[in-house]
Length: 203
Image 1 (tube, one colour):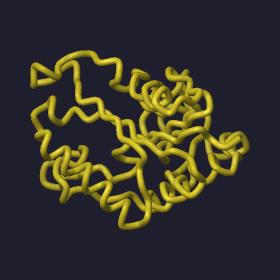
Image 2 (cartoon, one colour; image 1 turned 180 degrees about the vertical axis):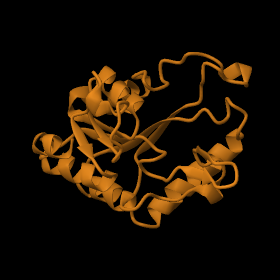
Image 3 (cartoon, helix red, strand yellow; image 1 turned 90 degrees about the vertical axis):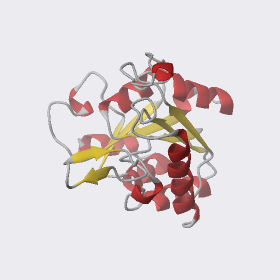
């Protein structure tokens, strides 16, 4: 069955995480110059578009709450991401961000928000806006909290990555429906309906 929607995490799924070689830090891009698409990501989004499936992003973005960036910079990072996709004939149909963090430095953004993954809020709002059953939607992420959020929302879930460790979602109560090395592979299985066969092979 064709999915009603495919929702993607942003950092580590669509774009690369930013690595500061001097400080040894890994973080979300904090300015547009740091935005780099992951290999195959634009092609995967383009195939979702060509299949007529709505493609959304749902992402925790606490950079403003932690005073690492400004709203203007978050907007610039988003525009750069959309521009990089558009240059490759790929588009997103919508973006949902949760800006909150329970330990935020910015007092207005300090709260335990139900939209913040592993909470299901962003995903449920996307399904509601599209007027589609959550069970016909997929959420693709690279973190155990993404899998937990998808399951809490009633979505089918895909985890992308190659890490093998005790914290991987394949070894938790929140096991994903699909494990794949990258977004392109995950989208191929989702659109072709071969996810059930792929899971035991890729786990």
